[in-house]
Length: 241
Image 1 (cartoon, helix red, strand yellow):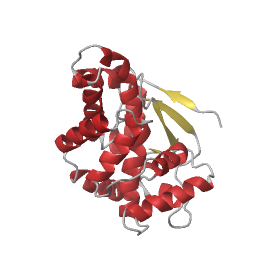
Image 2: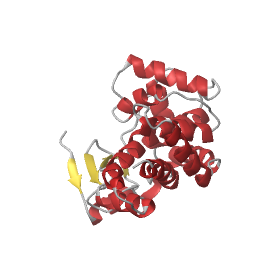
Image 3: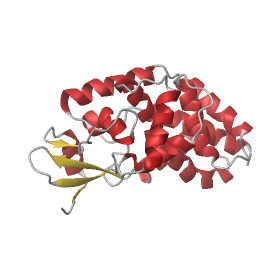
């Protein structure tokens, strides 16, 4: 079915409309990609979404953004010549803040690649199982919430850093630069909703509607953590210019 593109004030209204929900995810075996998608707030609605979002907020409460920024700056300086340093630092530092040290970026990237689409990918099932093990080995909604924080931060935050890199060749105020990019060229440019009663699909424009972190009950809860990670990486890159 063709998507209806929604922008401007209509996008804001759509994100606040309780009759428009994210496309729900079908379940799957514990520790699989399908299980993860069916256990996180991203694809849920109503009371189920609220309860799962609470688990994400609980996880983020453990994260000190000042420490996050400092650790991102330190790790970037240490790993300056590492391939894919942006994602390695974002995932590693955020995982460390959530209680998991030395987490490899590969499984998070593998899951992130199919997280939104839910495409069948045996490698993603293996990666989810690895992440469940890293977070204690229990495939429950608390673990799913923590995995989702990493997966949703990985590509979006790395993209924000990537957009900032060209401007770091000259001395800039990092915080102002990142906030400018988020509003003028956000990493996440749209999101999907569908009607509750019929499968009418709407693509909600975030970039052109000045809603870089969404809005309503599904607004991104990790914006300050994303800014802290991106700022720490950019500060280290700027110092190395």
